Length: 93
Image (cartoon, rainbow, N blue to C red; front, side, top):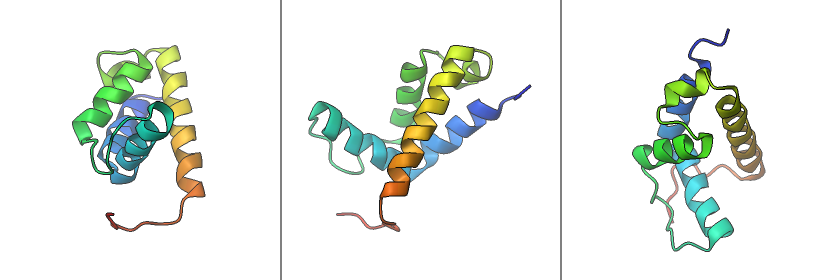
């Protein structure tokens, strides 16, 4: 029914610099990792999503119900985080 909706959304999300910033800050907050802002690349984000969704390809998110549910959870958490943050329009610190 959804076609490639989730896989496409995952690809867009991985290219979003704000999502990659979210991954940087999540790594610091959740794991105490020494991850400066700007660390995660598009590829890192893609690998992170595949690992979190337990798939080998983003395309599997569209055919695996559990992976799709996990991806929606990732999107929801990111969107809540983004909504709580002031706009940083390209500012790097």
